[in-house]
Image (cartoon, rainbow, N blue to C red; front, top):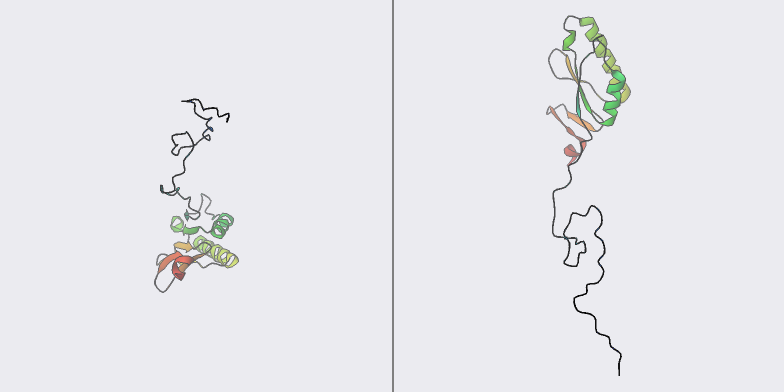
Length: 143
């Protein structure tokens, strides 16, 4: 004769606690359920590049060190020399500083207007197509 003990009716086994912060579905037994067919939108990505606008400060200086750091991080910088409207000599000094900065960093300086008062310095890995007058990223132009 076997000594079979019947299980009590209506008694549920111990449930594992649902992990803290779990927002997904739960099975009837209280277990977290990973629905592999449910796809939500990807999390919003944080941009790693920016378009920066720079104008001379109250003492008519350009923050060339900060511009250089931003360019090396991949930001594209637009420098506006229009506030120096009656200071042609100082505009030329600023242009020479930007030219020296571009030589040090290894990027070009591009004029966005006919008077050379709006200047563009592309960031690291940003390509400027001068034949088609298009701006873009290196990866977009290669594909």
